[in-house]
Image 1 (cartoon, rainbow, N blue to C red):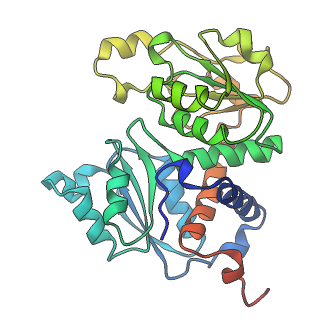
Image 2 (image 1 turned 180 degrees about the vertical axis):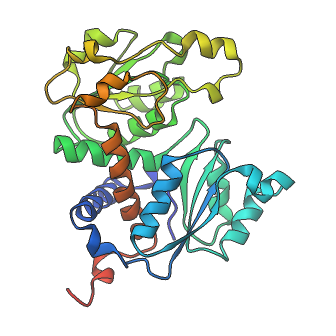
Image 3 (image 1 turned 60 degrees about the horizontal axis):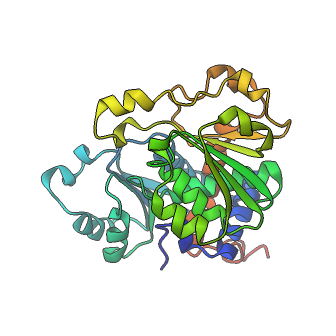
Length: 313
């Protein structure tokens, strides 16, 4: 039995297999319409979510499976004080696989220690968001045709942004990847990520607070919102929330085939006028997330293509 808590839980070969399978599903979704008949996915979301929770549900339903779960801690026994360990013990009797989002870093890890079914981390605090990373990777791979030899700009909240942390951890495994880390000083990437991942891996990166200056160099611009829920006081949030806003005037500096990604939700860090630009792919990115989660669910359930289609192979 396998769990997915961090992107690093997958070898590079396993990650590439899931991305390739996701692209196959994207091309022929009807072929996979019944591969999870009789299977159930539990969605345990202790924190608000739209795309992640619904994309997991859509992924399972698209494959003929069923879904059960809760969408907030208030609607679960967590409100009564039940531990994550006890919850997952119970859920293991109800479902075949589980996706968990929790505001506390490490909660999905705890769940995996007590679970009898595969646990997928759907986001834990400011730590990891591996399925968003798979979504980002399949988007980049599909649009760029590769995951190596890229200059990736990351802009906004790089300190608390778990999607940024997970994507950096994943992308450093590919060759000739360079990062331009664009943020106010207060929201720079955590020190451990700088030292233990970028510096230790001798990865080419720069830290800056100038977006326009580096726009012409980028192959990918990964925008993030400044997250109010991660701040300890409202004053700091208000001071930093409008640090970087991507608009049409800034897009003029970008390459013809530079793509803008965003894990969503967007607040005001990307002007709605950018939505009309064909290089703005964040809504397409959300669509791709369903396909790659379908591939991940199949992989963790041990349903590889040879097993699924054994009668037609």
